[in-house]
Amino acid sequence: MRVWRGAARMLRQAGFSCLGELPLASGRRADLVGMSAKGEIWIVEVKSSVADLRADGKWPEYRVHCDRLFFATHPDVPADIFPAEAGLILSDGYFAEILRDAPEHRLTAATRKAVTLRFAQAAANRLHLLHDPGLAGMEQGR
Picture 1 (spheres, helix red, strand yellow):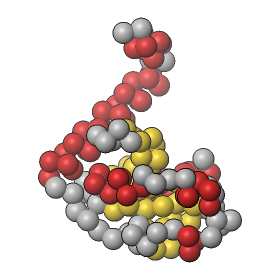
Picture 2 (cartoon, rainbow, N blue to C red):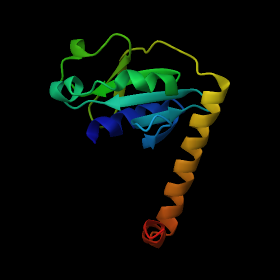
Picture 3 (cartoon, rainbow, N blue to C red):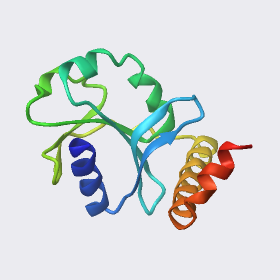
Picture 4 (tube, rainbow, N blue to C red):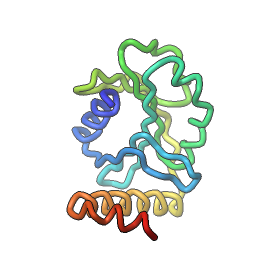
């Protein structure tokens, strides 16, 4: 959670709105998604250990849902184990910095619209649950 928090703070300071655990059309969930005011979409996959990265063979699938793909980790995880095909963010739990920028691979208009709609719906639903926590129980009964 500390790695996530530092990366999200960095994205917010850079002008991105952030959501965690965003369900994607592929059925995967992105750890952290940032969307800029211009609609640029970044996905950040949080890795807390060497074992966490080694166990994750699905990370290339996230690329089709974003303009840039990053890994985020903390100083105790060696930076050189992360694939060069993605960017790298180092987080101390309070803030983060980009150690390696991610290559850009612009989304198609249709994919951008689909991810943007998922982002907006997830954000609105989470906000609604904050104002009406009883709704969660009602939705489970459907």
